[in-house]
Image 1: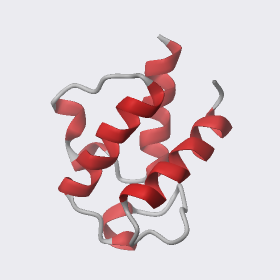
Image 2: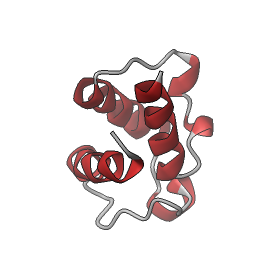
Image 3: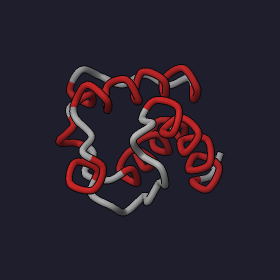
Image 4: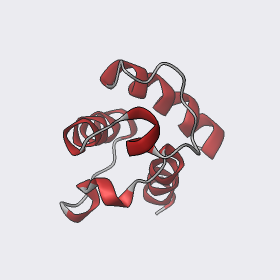
Length: 82
């Protein structure tokens, strides 16, 4: 799966899990632009694990690891590429 495909699937998950995000900008700062908190990002990661059939470690659940949604795309891509 390439990054474009990941972005498209992730956009659907983002709008489902985070209805406050009306339009996904993968390079926008998540906390500042969308007001996303750590609970929201954990919910998104749990859905991401289910959708992409990948697992995140406890360390990877921290909001600090995902300044942008592109950071999450990159992490998913790495996990799928392994």
